[in-house]
Image 1: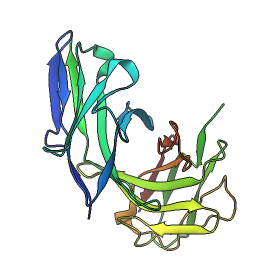
Image 2 (image 1 turned 90 degrees about the vertical axis):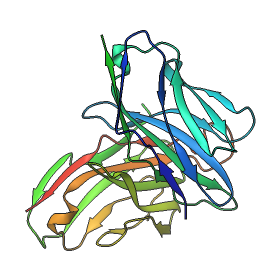
Image 3 (image 1 turned 30 degrees about the vertical axis):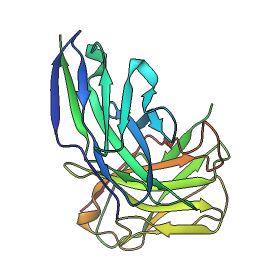
Image 4 (image 1 turned 180 degrees about the vertical axis):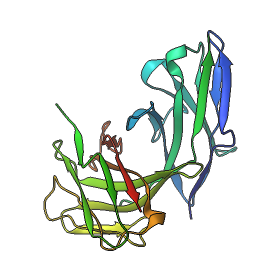
Length: 115
Length: 116
């Protein structure tokens, strides 16, 4: 069985400070990892993904994430937070193996950027 | 414009009254999926489909049915809705072919369902 943990329900950060939203995963096999963002009353939007290759992945809106296989983590980061980054962030995983398998999402982390 | 549409956006119904939530995508995606979002539980996958006539259960399929007769449509059917199916539902699609755009899911705007 695969699982995703987002240990923080909420992260507060001051505008201009760096932000980190944590994600750890558990899969049997090689993972595909994703970050999505949800703004109020909207569907989810793709931010970035790790499939293979470089462990540091850059995505939309200045976000990046680092795949760490030994720690089974895929933390989302941004060097300088904006108030407009305030939203709900979801990490997701699926196993990279023959055929397509189900996708598992974390419980989400609410990011609050304080002006 | 590339998009995933869902209808209705809001629905209030009563226990036991069959309902269907439609989902349609215009990106020729092979993969489509349904999720429900509940506070504290995040998104949980209900069913997914790899292609026409190919569907499989996600993590929470009980009480739901799906069909994939056409590539663009993936309706979610609740034969006998119950109050514990009150939730926010999202449909999503993605390309299953290899390449940079594969696996990126595009989500619909959501359907808020209340079962009384």
